[in-house]
Length: 232
Image (cartoon, rainbow, N blue to C red):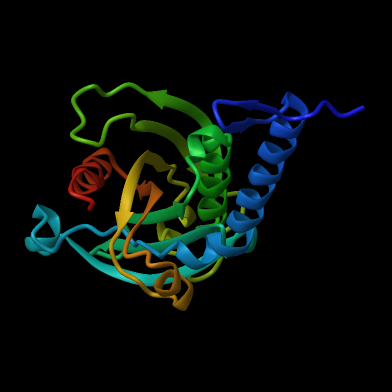
């Protein structure tokens, strides 16, 4: 039996059961709004190495190349990616992937997804990961909360026309190093009719940046690491 509402000082004080029903309804409405409108207010937000960065400016690295956009989870995650390569065409490659979301991916097993993406990018180069380690580098000039992982990349069979085809034919081990961080970003552009109707000129979203560097030698992987510090 439902309890009657109590009138206190001219205001209606709702019973506990009715309050929780309305709270549940509000949460349900917000959840549905997020599921429906979320992809409309999330923008692609690519991350780049500025052209003034030392190794781009002096011509030792080139890029950006292969600019790509994709979606995951019905558009609730929007991925942008670009790549950079050493000018000799064989020593090093850097892939920068930016993931935009309204949710903080650190609360959704971010590390696992990062490793999955690194594995996907490694397979594209015809490599397999082994001997993974977490790198502690307190001196890296990266955003707060960054992490660095490193693996050996080896290939049992060479895929034709991959960047490291030559080194792999020679039996070389490729250094694979991943840098990633997560930060709150603010999108200032209004791109959808929905945002205009709602009067939204900006929306807070999270951006996860993952930089995957491949190299045949320590010198080149260190160059890639310095470029990652310049990513914006």
